[in-house]
Image (cartoon, rainbow, N blue to C red; front, side):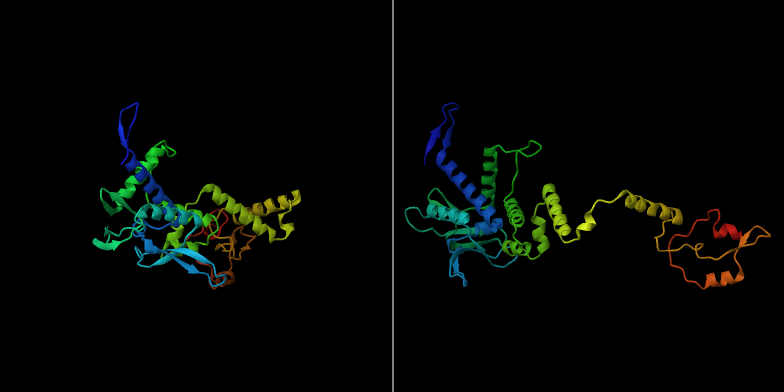
Length: 311
């Protein structure tokens, strides 16, 4: 164990403990960021979780990470990237030490509330003369201390706050934005529903605008070029005149354009002698037998409409 004393403050610092805390915070962040696994799945990784497979097409051997069943009770295999392989190999070299083997340790499952049998866990550390498995509380503490040491702040100037589960959201967002299909991301994350996976993805305003512009560009390439020419003054005047005529013909009635009002289809005649407008008996019979579209709103009695004409 190495101790040091600051010359200005005289404070003694345990450099061995600080180095260990910094390393395991770095290792946990990188594994979570590169795999998108859950916190409890991280703590259950063992030396036996690292396996390999041979591709049937090329015969190439690729490393895999076996994730034990957790929330969804389903086991899954993840492809180990070169960056992840470098992190895992560094952890294994650190744990082996001079003995050359990773010591088996027991761990407590906080969800099942049982003690697991001794296993060569990847996330374990020395405490005195013992080897102990990491707990979720210890990992959260390492993350909080690492963020405090960076001095990073949010938009409001407050210290940046991260949870271990945030790295799962970062993984999903990064994977989908870089072209990984959402159904494949769902399988990697172990989600039962695709909606859950898409809920993890963060959408930014700039991303929405760029995606929409790209969609419009692709759509315009499939349409005739004449549809996107600049309109003439005559065409624009005709376009505006169409809506002016429509407004004059139906007024401000709330009915749909294709629905007719009651008085619009009632034939009337003008009695020149009396100067009043009344429908004939034959017209009434035709009106009563003509079905009209149902509408919750009745026409208002305005001057010149049927209720005023016959009253």
